[in-house]
Length: 498
Ligand code: ADP
Image 1 (cartoon, rainbow, N blue to C red):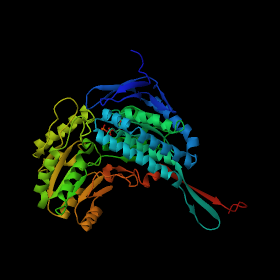
Image 2 (tube, rainbow, N blue to C red; image 1 turned 120 degrees about the horizontal axis):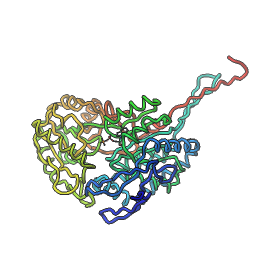
Image 3 (cartoon, rainbow, N blue to C red; image 1 turned 135 degrees about the vertical axis):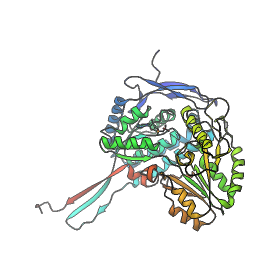
């Protein structure tokens, strides 16, 4: 068998054909890895192989890191307008290619085209927001008296970035936006389940005018390429989005190598609380957006729905009906809300959790099975009568499974909400704003959504408390995560030692 070409033609089930890069993207070129190994990429909705792509291993990561270090020399001191131009052009290119990017994402990840289109719009918006920050990354002058002049600078980093499979393009934008804005450089590894859109985005980076080596994109496996990035001696930082377990491994590798900086955006078991005075129909729509958006493969999914006893029965009845109306299936059908789970492995994990819920005595209100036919589809599943000790109430399922928990008082709701090792997000639904603010104050989570859920904005920071992570993405905070402070103190009198 001959080598896989560095570009292959891919036919997407919705009739689109395009040219997919397969190589490692280093120094603005697609290249072969040293040992020319490839791996297959499977479409979760058809269970068929879309293509293969080349796999990066340790020595390829070394080459990519060297490219990022070389590029850093000029990119880190480039004029902000230069970086802004690249980001704005990139945002325009994302918009221009929105239909194709959404189709690639849907084919590779299984998510509905509706969901992919939302991701692409957020991606363009985020790059535009980052463009606005390029000329706002400044230091301070610190007055310590007449004898000295002191200033600080924000110094960009050479970083490794490891992204997950649930929002391949959007997570790439959350990682690369601040890299490009701050003058940092990167080696970004996509998830092995979903490498296609990141390679396509690499083409757009070149078209946007990014100098070579600034961003390098590799496909590869966590334990090989991901581990090589986390343990690399020449990287200043590693940024990761994924499971808490892997986050801990990455942090250990970072500590054991060169103590590189770490930002981690990890798992969650987020509470979504509905009080008696909430607008029921709206709250139900937010429960659905919270847990069934992206087929439940969302780190901040509102997977524990806490409902006050006065409206519990009414919410359950309305929710059951609304969930049974959710369109699951062919992700390319514009009507479909929920597509396939990303892989057979992921689907099996979700089905095991569903079985454990049944075994531990929770009641299936609706769903509870794999959907018939080809593809890794799971029915949107609602469990009632859920108790705190059950696995489905404690562990992150990362699928379309919601647990309903009844409570009586505000204190009880807060107690249940906070009884988790995580702290990524929470939802509060009530028409009493004083209650909402009071409850928001007492919940330990990085993001609190009031009368909304899974509602992101580029200006609003996102990240977790406790086992949900370290550091923040988006907002102003992220620019601190991609720069280090350098303080310069100048003695003004050069005539003597004192
Ligand atoms: P999941 O278990 O749901 O696939 P992961 O957290 O394992 O999610 O994956 C998220 C990202 O982390 C992927 O890009 C994956 O390749 C990477 N990854 C997995 N294991 C490791 C590891 N040991 N070191 C570095 N990266 C890893």
